Length: 77
Image (cartoon, rainbow, N blue to C red):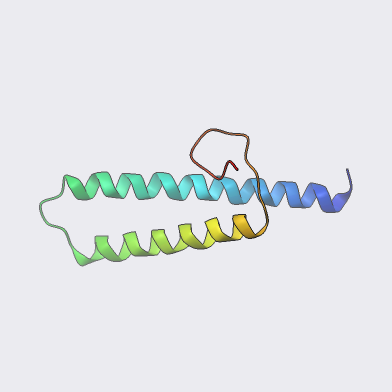
């Protein structure tokens, strides 16, 4: 395997782990929001930032045609 392919594979894996981490953070924030009495604007801003990061990472992974063999909610096509 050439150096280029090794670097691409490592960066693809890093991107997929970032997507998985962001998915978990978004799910945790949504669960917290469901149980919160006082929904502040800080929570709303944080959720929008997380979603923007997730959408960017997801589209980048799609553009790079990244594939995942894990069954943990990331791109699996």
